[in-house]
Length: 157
Image (cartoon, rainbow, N blue to C red):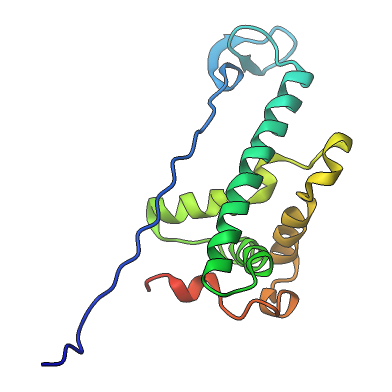
């Protein structure tokens, strides 16, 4: 007996801690300096915002490292495939409902902002450059030619 009609599904799950700092909670309290609303409590501290963004970049870099290792376990060039995926999502964001939104947010490196001088060794700028490449030029398959597969080949139609 031979089975030729089968379906294989791969589910990947990872817990993601999503920080929701107090300064993001908006109230309808009126800003006396103009027609703006400002965050609850007190005005935002630029140093605090910089620390939160730095932490977000560190967490995102860890997630990217995990994704890169998955590509490598599949026998691909992990770094190039991760950069290509970031580039492709910037070029053509997914329209697959909530899951598409999650993937779009995960692979949009600029959400966490650009690294500052203290983070130069973090190599995060490569992720942002891949995103910019996708938005401005596209043609991610040529830029990241060492990755032979596209993220879109893995997704259902």
